[in-house]
Image (cartoon, rainbow, N blue to C red; front, side, top):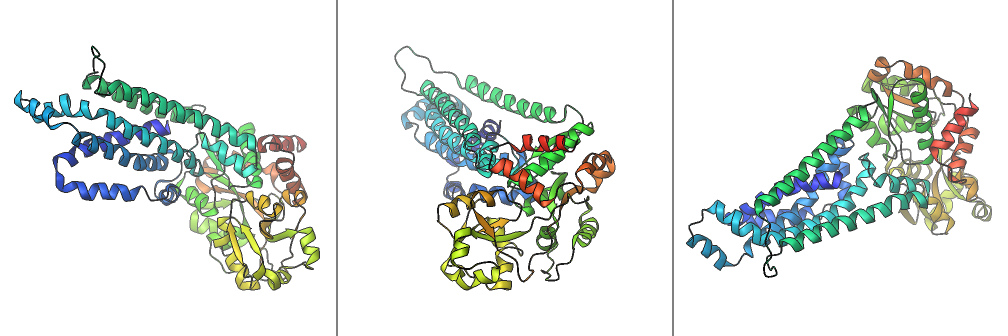
Length: 491
């Protein structure tokens, strides 16, 4: 749906524009140069830029996919039309054809092979970008790849990658056959399809994709009112989101739409404010430093009441009761490395940091409670900083490509890779109590959500959370199954 609908929109925009470029030469240089430059903009950056404006899901994805598909189709339309032999146009003029008749009966049919080649190129790039669109909740086969990367699960990655490859091959084969059919050098006795038939086919295709989009949206809400639950891009968030989703599905009539692996705190927070997301698990320390922009406090005080009050006053968002654990951040090293260099605290690491390489997620490198704050508080300056996905950090340190990683204290992978989190001896980090954050309007409309989630409040300590994470990270279980099993334990 994403690929087909965006190609239909791009064709509807690019083909008329290509015709105008042939008719009005003063537009050519500017528009073709602008189109060429547009292809150099990173697609992921474009997606991130549109999220605050258009929210999450299909709309920003379709805008970006259409944007990148326009130029190949535009360029091929222009090239095809200017490649029409002049004698053919002269013959049409000699027969008294109007400009519209020349376009419809001579120029477009002869330009179609080249135009379809441009469509073929646009299709290949669009399929690739549609996969990346999973990072902003657009769904599709890219969901399997992003979740597989986050969970280090090769089977999930292949579950998305193999169908995407077949989809690309199928599109390419279908368009190549269409290209052969419209090639103007036909065998003797063959007949070229008329332009009216071509336009009818394209229009029918567009109607199919429009209808598919409508049915897809109807399917989302068919079983009653829905609530959207989101998560960030690591195991613990998946499990907590699944726990909440399964409880709400069991104990209320609401249908749950899952938008997992949405990435950073800022992205989900903006989605929450726009109403694209209704509920997600958050950490008090992250909200205090990243969203509220409060300065780090070294008193170690419980900031949860401050965060709860500020969120209600500023954003009309409600923090429900904490799950029962605090998941603080730290820097972690291999156990043998810590013993060899006598490392126990972050202050000890600062002495040898200029000779070391650290791997950390993009968010950690820019957050005030991440690298920026640690550098100011501890004077940490590393030889090299490697920006990687949260779950690829562990592979990097296991393969000895880095010596230090950013880690969470409840992470199940710490045991697997024999890692030791270093003590925050200067008390830089505030408490990171985890709790559900929900839009106040949703909680008012559906108070039963609070009752459904109340069985989790205070029932997940750090040891339990570490055990749940380990079942996914070490045993290869799915977050859905682990969450379901834990709810059974809670009766």
